[in-house]
Amino acid sequence: MDGKERYISVAERRARLALRHRLAASTLAETPEDVADSLVALHGSDPATVFLAVGARLADPAGTVDETARALYEDRTLLRMHGMRHTVFVFPADLTAVVHASTGLAVAARERASLVKDMTKAGAPDAVWLKEVEDATLAALTRRGQATAAELAEDEPRLREQWVYAAGKSYEGVHTLSTRLLRVLGVEGKVVRGRPLGGWTSSQLRWAVAPEHAELDVAEAQSALLRRWLTACGPATEADLKWWTGWRVTEVRRALAAIGAESVSLDEGVGYVAAGDLDPPADPAEPWAALLPALDPTAMGWQYRDWYLAPELRPALFDYSGNVGPTVWWNGRVVGSWAQRPDGEIVWRVLDRTDVGREAEAAIGEAAERLRGWVGATRVTPRFRTPVERELSV
Image (cartoon, rainbow, N blue to C red; front, side, top):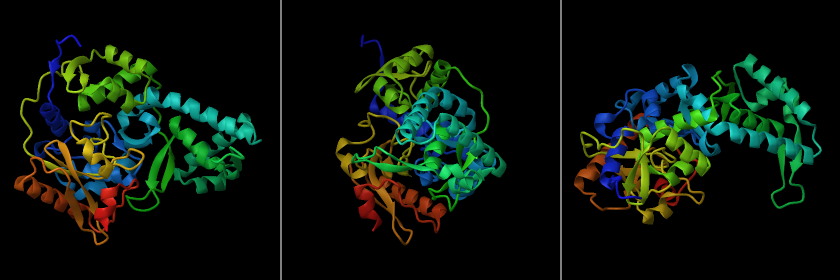
């Protein structure tokens, strides 16, 4: 660092987060599409996270479930698909081509090669046979509109084929072709997740044929994705960008140069913002509180999190795989966790009382009541559970 970069303080970063992630009261969104567009992507590994992340950012959360379902399953303005780090996200529809080209193609090639390799080792049919099954599966899905793997197997029985992989090893297992093939088709951008079999918290999702999209140049797509993410989440370090995208460091650096990203000084080192985004927010965010769900894109947005989450809180708030649980926020930092009890009550606990006084307690309580008001009778249990969430939910 040559000392010329503008220094962006922790306080300014928290102000940017509040305003750009639709968490301050003055920035709350009108629609689920507005929320997704502001955040770039909503984590979709746990279906409930999508709805909870949207509800936390809507000016009127009463219609969260119906409006988010409309966007996902009727208007298809939001699409659930594999994206960065081979993780399932919900993206604005206009971003799907960018995500597919920038992060999906390389993963898709590896996934298909792995499937063919495992089939060969197990003595299963060859790639030509696999292509026949794939074509028949896509044709069946086109006819049905949306379907489960079991329903597709009624039309294409070869999807039920099974074989043993890693025979004789400690991780030996049995593959069902439908599971592996639909996953490959998903990362290849040929199919996406559709309506759940149950309610909005259900993890049992149907499949649907992916909408057609333009095939973009990989480097151009990476530049477009990075520009959009830095606008929403900058400043960020090179390590943050590499972690969030899942790209090689050379790809990150190429995209940073292509979009003319500007370097800044952060407490943890050199960071980057989008071109022309050096000025601090014109108006500071008013005091705010939020209850964000497990895997919320704000809590999971950066690899280095000390500026909004104290390191000593991590054992209580993360599971063993590094997935964040439900979090309580006050003025741009994580101060605790929350959970839902069997009777529907939303309970919360402050774990870091630094600058958390009566105003904060009252605002957090209001956020909890707001959440319970629109969740109603639905019971939400995070897919990835953390120590403090388990304790609170009893």
